[in-house]
Image (cartoon, rainbow, N blue to C red; front, side, top):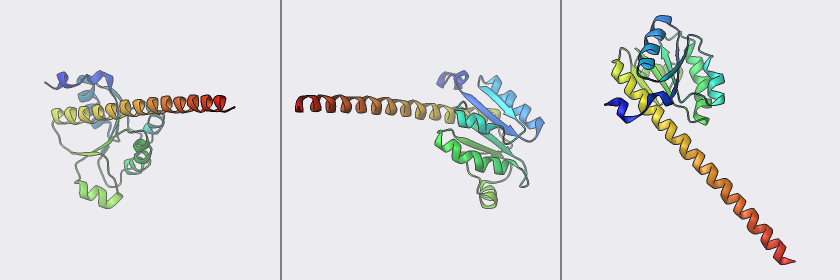
Length: 163
């Protein structure tokens, strides 16, 4: 049923987890569902991809309050917001602890442990929404450019006819 709703192969997901074992598990789950997945145990790795807009979604897995993933989320959050790239936080800690301790907030929070189907469904939902927003932004930019061209053409005609 899920695969009929979207084509996962058209979405590029970035996965960050400091635990190589968990990283491999999540990478496998999302790859087997058909998503294009990049992954890293290094929290600063996604910055370049976020800046260039190659990811449709970024998943940060947070294990402990001492995790350096927190700082990466803070840095990536503002940049990802500008690029309309959702950030999802995966953690066994509750959302209030994460937010109160580090002001960590993504568009979604998935409590560990989770079912594979839940991870796939929620990643797919956010990736699809992100793609829709990017498409609408592109349409707005195209229309804006056409309107500006029309205004310039009318202004040139007005100036030409005024003299």
